[in-house]
Length: 174
Image (cartoon, rainbow, N blue to C red; front, side, top):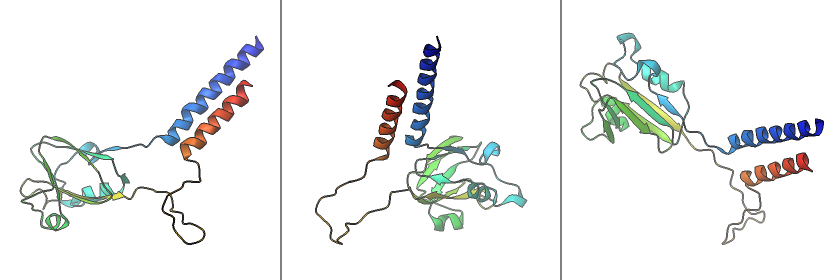
């Protein structure tokens, strides 16, 4: 009976380890609710930087999305010059459906304004900075010359995790 219990315990521990190890391999994208529970609305006169303050409290990565919820308004992505003027005749993106989802598809700055006359001037605008993706450092050959073919001598992180899982599995069931 005790050996059956120990066997079940080993299986549970293995499954817990296996499930937790997948968290390291998963890339998480986040959907941000612009303005949190207030949504995309004209701020009070005392809060004309409301959305830039909201944006500065968050960290945005490539493939994250922004959800704009609003009534009788619109969302435009514009250039930095158009952002400063609060006006755009040719926005890079436009939506007025009341529930806009915008994907941050590249690193850098995104400039958002309301398309309704007077709303941008009253503070319904925002700049989002999307961080550069984290990339592994580039290695150079030790002799200072480059070869015509690339060669990866290190194991990938998924291979290392797989080897760890296999060795743990072997330790539990041997």
